[in-house]
Length: 551
Image 1: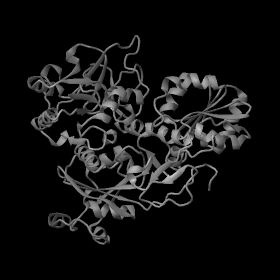
Image 2 (image 1 turned 90 degrees about the vertical axis):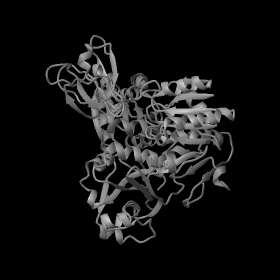
Image 3 (image 1 turned 180 degrees about the horizontal axis):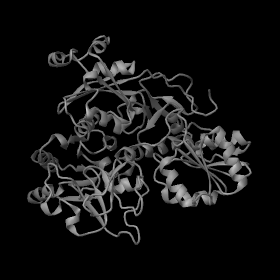
Image 4 (image 1 turned 60 degrees about the horizontal axis):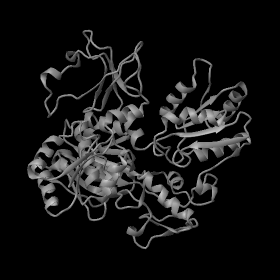
């Protein structure tokens, strides 16, 4: 049996429950390595055969499916978004029909839907448009001549471009920018009055991971409803800085303010009734991995109640800080806090780690609440004494949660944000080529991309547009070093005479990664379609502190 499964728009927790269950039971997974988030492969069971179709021909993919079928095993063909859109599934299904191999199709959330959700957008606004056009630019797959320009279709609507991750949204009136750059007007000669919105840089962080990192300053937004509440909000903003607004003044509305700040702020603070806050945020709540912190205080400053993202988003910590600032009582309702138990997600945040599989948090917390001991694994020594109910696993495979840069298995994986990506590439390499190579690098090495925080290369590449755009799209600062600086890096590295002859140093990616990190090499040189990557990690010294009041 072959199961075609849509992986969704990117975040591991945005795959459907059925799709996740199929991944967990599959004997073989063939995934689109240039597009699918490799974190989803963490759902695979032990012994599952995994193939990257980005490096295979159609015949090779079909050969694997036939082999699995002959061995009475199940295959998941994992496509990005929803397989029915640009998934090239028809040719696979036709071949399976010819071979008499059964298959089914599990839909996924397409990227144009994910992008709209991340931007709190609606395509089909009443009295504006009730039509959505999905298209893409011509590339290796040709576009029919009759479809090369939307104006030729004679349809007014919203145009969602999937291939280049662009959204086209129509806004009446002045130009409006909603989270990316845009070009005003698809047809300069007078066609549809649509701005071209390219939300890739803002959507990707939101869909993958949106939590304040470590002790990073939280960007707060305060909303009050009365003069007394406004005075309290202004007082609180002195302790936890952020914008302060009053509903009904200056055109501020509850719905509009909430939509804007839910997409932009790290934390929303309502000074008023809890019910107002609950109703306001309800349409926007998506996932504990992406939702901002939400805290509500009464206008008298008696109670501070975290409503959303208590641990990962930092709402519990923020409620405690705001309570201390005005003499309120923090009302913390999360189960581990109420029982005085270790909160693994809050600890991860304190240690500047990303939680890779948020649905697995409940297994660790649930075990602690049931009085069981949970086991951890870490290649780094963790200073201090483990909290009650937490002990080191005898073997990494027996861990319930683990610190790692390369997650594998069924544990809850916490990814330290300490990685530096070393990059080598040919002149003229595009950002798309680098993105595809990076996806292959992560898939083949199990590297969690959220652990990478910076990039480095040789100064010969400092004006390469593709490399600069690639790093910019991930939010990574990039450092460039001379050949002399790279030659001086101590250590043993993969040497190349060709690279030596071109650049003056025997290895760029490994040496640059180590130099920029000030640490050690994690993953050696990896070559893919003219691009080389290596990963190094900064020095990391985790400890068992996890509560806000612990120094």
